[in-house]
Length: 141
View 1: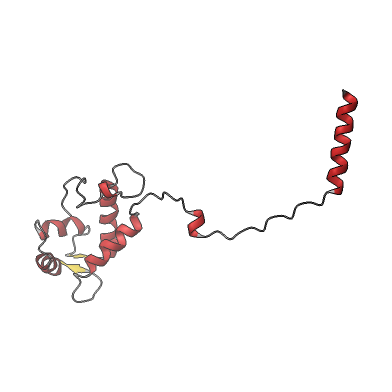
View 2 (view 1 turned 180 degrees about the horizontal axis):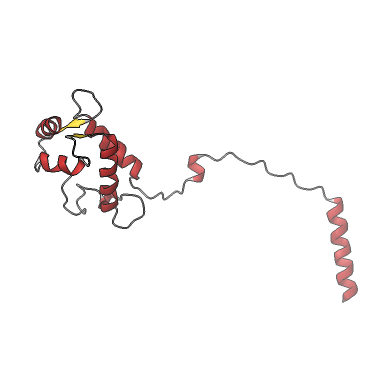
């Protein structure tokens, strides 16, 4: 039996030496469609959440100075027929209480809001975690 194994190994070694190696497959460039899972989890990241909210918020900046005053915020909220007291929502955003909300204050406010909405802590807001979704908890925007 040992002789049969030895002969088998010798034959395999000889075949390996005479058989040309298979050409290495060329690496294919990764594309989003091939690297992304086919069942990607839908959701909104903090960056996208901030970008969307910031864009909407900055429409209230009617004088274009890069910050929103209480008067601008109140006019904006009235125009969009928002619920709630604009002065209260403004006060929550105006962290340094200077009468204006700038980008840094808005980003800090939105990060806290995102963390509060992200109930499962996965860094994404699923449809059921977003305000206004039928299964989302009823929260003031």
